[in-house]
Image 1 (cartoon, rainbow, N blue to C red):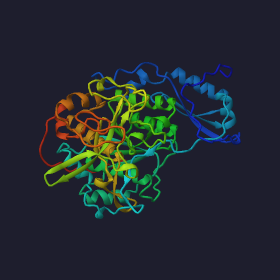
Image 2 (cartoon, one colour):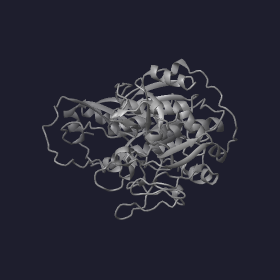
Image 3 (cartoon, rainbow, N blue to C red):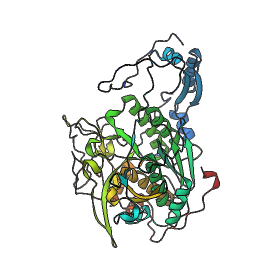
Image 4 (cartoon, helix red, strand yellow):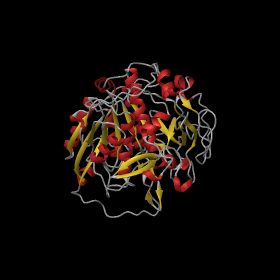
Length: 509
């Protein structure tokens, strides 16, 4: 196999940064680990068509990697002095490790070093004054996640029991003592939580409430408060292309914890990704749709430009994948009688705004055919997948009261909306007695027709403005949980939620 011809991988190149220059090559003996992604052995069923969800063993047999392909990669590794660290037919991946010199020989390329700049950024926004997080007691308009769930009429008498929510993290960590204190303050038992290490990523709190710890704690506290009976698995990985791909794939194909909802609050503009990385990650998200796993992704906190410096409109990936529920953000105002106003979240360049727009990489899916998605605001007016699909409270000015590194503070961002919706999915799954799975066709169909959304018609995120129906700021709207449950075939029960069952010791981590 050593003499087989090599083929350049389309989409694997990354645009050089301005003024970058080549330095000395990496040391030949430096060890490097890579993930090789393999082709499917067969096609996946169309996720947009109703059919029973595949089991994890079934998807491996139908559309996993062919064992012969894995054997060929392992033989290739042996021929070039590389070690096989792991091989997974379900995830269609083989992890190889070896010195730089062996990798250069195997793949026919020069290695000058590893690009370890963060690939994605967390989409949370702490409420700051004078550059410091604001104490929660000093913010009159903030909410607990329980209050937000009540305002959005999340299903009563449900806790998410029997469900697992996966949370993807690319940095930071959580402290059990903080979580216990936080949930006790809400009158809830701490959910069963376990951390899962991927590619060496670990639960490592940094002690900075405005850093990645803020993202991790926000995700856990929102999801855990909304669905206190659900188990939570937090998957940690390095913030790289490979880390992002591997952590999402590990969560989706986890046959031990078997999450039914995956919350992803990290991402970046499509222009910052290689085509190869987006294609590989989208293929994993296709697996989730076939398995009946609902993936919820934050749409970004930097308006229609998504933080890019070129003055163009950009959608955030992986929220722009047609196989996820993309979550935008609003500013929520409420009184004793419920919601009094809800508009697009846009606090300007310094304060952040909801992401949203029209994808440059993914075509418009069939279930958005009647959503009147406009052409892109960019020159050429491309027609593509519209982002977001749904929305929820995200403005730090009306944000979520959380506890991070011992500090009670208020946090917003579309990062809060992804775990909020993940918690709602866990409640729906429990009440329906089945996973809602790939939810998008039903969101744009039965749920919309059944009054499942509060339409947001006021505001904009830069290049796009809100209006009646779907828009590129808030999607279809914010949730009316009871109506969503009814539209999906469940009965609505009025009353308080029952207390969550005690967590299992095996889920502590």
